[in-house]
Image (tube, rainbow, N blue to C red; front, side, top):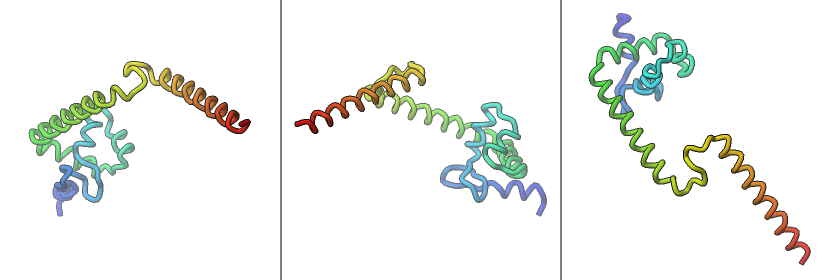
Length: 130
């Protein structure tokens, strides 16, 4: 078996899309890092891939460029639609403005928990005294 055939055989079609054999890693999940400008070393380390596996992904993308780009764009668009949908669904449930910094949200949440704790302690004291 040639080296070319070996690399190609590392990618199989699954219901999730083209994936590395023996993993749940899709070509599209690797593309997230590629599109994000991450280095090959970073991608290999973060996804625990071998050089051969990463080469196979790059070759697959090159060989199926139009199809992969089209499908990836569709996946990203769908992901954005879902994010926007759930953000809207949860907007009224969220106690803080969406643009409030996380640190401030955490501070207010801790204050609320402390108030609830004090109220529960006071309630327990009142019930014990009766």
